[in-house]
Length: 316
Image (cartoon, rainbow, N blue to C red; front, side, top):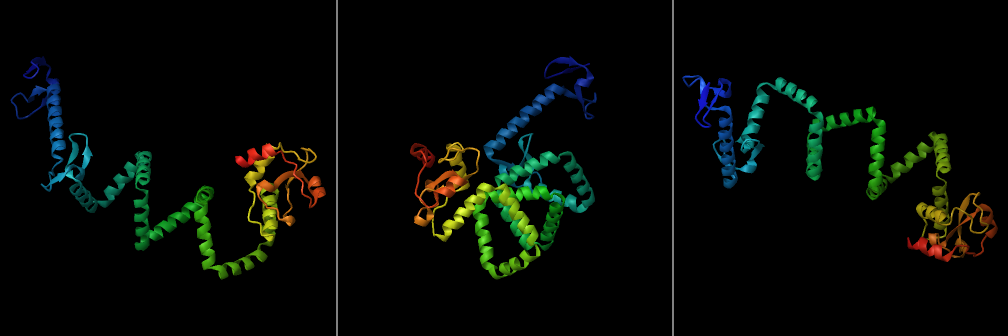
């Protein structure tokens, strides 16, 4: 048993820290009092550092601001500045690179998700800086460029479906950029592209025809819109309805022919004012009719639409 002079309590020997400098081999204060004293010291030191805005590095002995130190849970920042800490790490790596790589690999395997999440957050905060640095590194370092190409090729071979989905999503979200890029490439290499297409079509004619037939069968509305655009292009019409507008019109009129009222037949877009008479290909000049009614209407001007419903449709 021993009495702590700070709390004035008689405690067992295991309540004190070992200290060889004393006659009893134990520290004067108990563990709890010592922890409180250290905590107060660290708090006061942290407050002094905050007030001063920095401190002196324990290695280079130079006073530096707090942002030149790494964060630490004791007094808020580490005892060594960032430059000295990096120099120590580089020296350790030069002395024993194999051991450092092994330790790094073990740490990565045990903290994979945390490391990736931190990297994702950093890239999100500094996306432009990271992209610019990678571009410069790729353009100036041939070995780095070769490694990137090899890794990219291996990844595409290993995960082809992921790559296709990623490219598709990116293209859909950057339609204007992709269109402009493809247009510039076509203008710059027009003759080569024309020669390539002329040689490619005869060699793959059956596959191209089959794919086109399959697409027309799976996308009837898009095919109808394409046919109308083609016809109107010949007549120099500047306005064209979209597939979304056509589907909205079908929904508004209940998927029925506006002339005969049938709902069991395939509907086709009919021009209220025929194109031959100067009618446009915009949605304001379109009405859904079945094939029979569309054919019998021929080139007459007849509007079977409800004016109020058309105002709502055009207003939306």
